Length: 207
Image 1: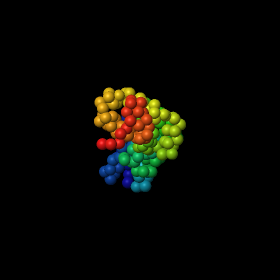
Image 2 (image 1 turned 60 degrees about the horizontal axis):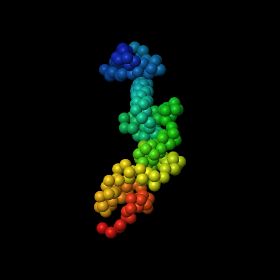
Image 3 (image 1 turned 90 degrees about the horizontal axis):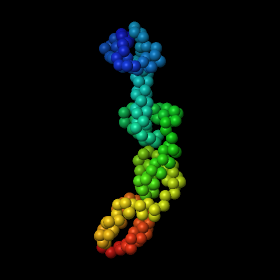
Image 4 (image 1 turned 135 degrees about the horizontal axis):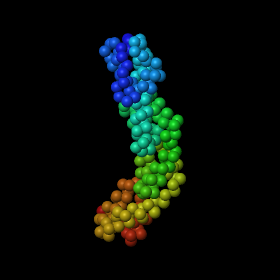
């Protein structure tokens, strides 16, 4: 097939009109890389390479946009990109971001561990689960959380004072609800019992 016309469409992008009635929009960088010119014959293989390069560029731009919004792990970024692009192209975009220093799972894991344990006051178990949702390797997440050395007793004390002190004064039913709420946050049974005992309540297993 032959390139009938090349004209600028939008800033930096060009419309490539082919004689078979198929139009293709490519960034000027790709037009230059493939030395595309009006009147040039282009075979299907070369056309496919141009399309793939266009996809690669779009995937990289999407990755940059996502990373500008917030930090991502390699795994999370890859999963988001592969929703819109072929697996190989998504992987290449992630690799390029890593090459440019835009991705650092170790640094991201450390940042999340400190945020979840010290600011959100998540239990170790819940923080580990949330970091998994962010696409971080489980072992890396675990080591990062352990390095923070958060004290469950201190976490529970802060949570109780901030959210549940009044409810603890509402009698046995209120205290049982607090116990259940803290358990749902992923804290250990014994840690919760110890924390609540400071409010002169001993957990009673009887209904």
